[in-house]
Structure formats: structure tokens, C-alpha cells
Image 1: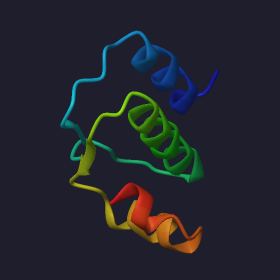
Image 2 (image 1 turned 90 degrees about the horizontal axis):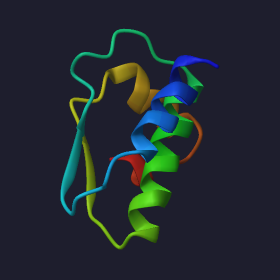
Image 3 (image 1 turned 90 degrees about the vertical axis):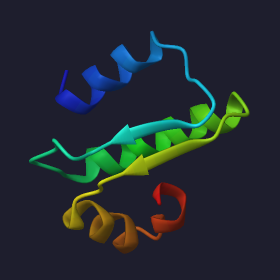
Image 4 (image 1 turned 30 degrees about the vertical axis):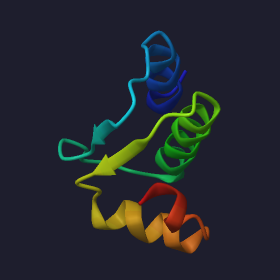
Length: 75
């Protein structure tokens, strides 16, 4: 299982609080799986009727999100 899938599985064991922040300041390497992970977290927040924010996104991650047309969903 890759890092993004492991992180998704581990995060599902947590309770999502309203107004949760996911901080990417310590992220060094990114690829398309990071965008997929963010979208899955966003879907989870919507299903739970919670607000979710992503902060300190690396430039490469915002570029990937823009490339795939989902920048508004991960900003």
C-alpha cells in the first residue's frame, strides 16, 4: 500500500471535526495521489457536513490541482 492509501486508511479512523485544517507544510514530495487524497478528504467532509481547509499547500500541489481542474475543491 502506498503512502497516500496508508494515510487515507489511518485518517478514516479519526473523527473529522468541523473546521478541520490539514497542514501540508511538512510535505516534501507530491504526486497525483496527493490530489486524490485531498479530494477523498473533501468528499468525507461534505458527507459529514463539516468544513475542511487545506493550508500551506506546496506550489507543485496547487499546480497539479489546477491541471486536473480541481483547484477550487482543494483550496
